[in-house]
Amino acid sequence: MPNHWLTKTDPETFSWDNLEKEGKTIWDGVRNYQARNNLKNMIKGDRVLIYESNIRPAVVGTGEVIKEYFQDPTTTDTRWVAVEIKAGKKFSNPVLLSEIRKDVLLSEMILLRNSRLSVFPVTLNEFNRINFLGNAHTKKEKIIV
Image: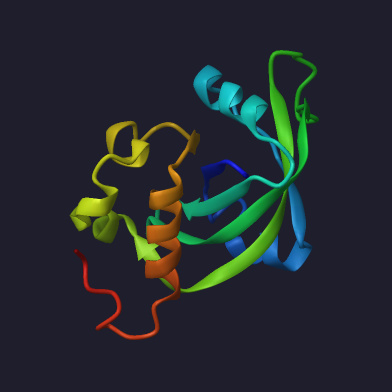
């Protein structure tokens, strides 16, 4: 069974639209040891939530790890690694950080406790809940429990 992760990106630098257009990308430039260790724990087939930070913080879609960790090509420092991620599905309704904060089923997410961490695990229940909220087609379906 695959693991589940959340990866953050700055949409001004690399947005969901960039990922969707390219189809896949190297997830590089991570310079935090805890996030780096999380990259090292990703395996091929793991599912990923793509979170755009800054302007309108929200989970905007899903992806999948297609290549396990390797030397980060943006540095010669061997301490830093990257993975390759392919685009999955764009959410019809981005799941805003404000919605995540209000949802009792998401109250234990690392996102809410350690907002500076750019790569971290999510539980299967958290992944499924965000996936549900992101794909709900009516306001009625998006009622927060």
